[in-house]
Image 1: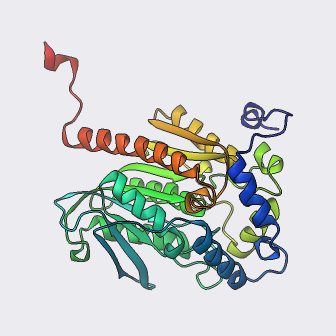
Image 2 (image 1 turned 90 degrees about the vertical axis):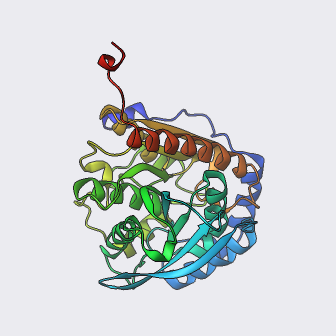
Image 3 (image 1 turned 180 degrees about the horizontal axis):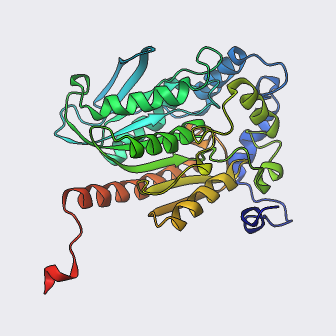
Length: 340
């Protein structure tokens, strides 16, 4: 066991689980469709994910604009969706969101409620990107698509209807991984405007390392060890690349981070380890943990109602960090000599 793993070892007692999360798991685990792994085809998992999202998440709610469009890329057009609480907007930051699903399933239809809520709370436009998943888009199609989409948004395309001054990157699970990877890509080769915050939600940051939570929550908590192995089998990423495991890459000079983890998740310790690694590099980090909740809760708000509180706390922290980062970008820090 590595030193980091020793620091992250969990207690021997049974983990705390909220009653609403437990009720959802009892329903979910009773369905054979929910058991990712084995010989299940990606198409079958996509159908189940779409069905579950329709049952378990809240509706979009009031929003001034929801509009689909396409992002042109060298590999073809990427579907994208704009969520905006305002019908007219002046220049400012934009959020680029990458959905979860292990790079095998998932789409922006399954995250509409969360993206709409993000736009309302942050008072920012949110561009949700539907990148290529496997098997249609083989590695590294997903990280390539996410990087290209972020660069496209940074160029203030007329499709968005306003000038973009900076980027906020966000995504859940596999999309959380993409959030980190794109932040690294745009640090090394900057886009037209800077990334001012990275905000990954229960990201897979270092799947080459088996942290304690990988075994502790291996079964019965929605995302399972067998499910993760199934996703990795289909994704077939280059394990040596930072774009597959960003915690193994260079973390220096990355933007401030707001990280959301959940307590009952094989990926739990990866989120903690990523937060700790950023802190060691001197990067500002806000780390929030949804205690007693499970992987995937951002689009299970109807089935797990307390998830609304977890999301509200996360978005409040993210809003604060965006305001601070944008303020520092426009008005640089003063030095002591300025007051003498």
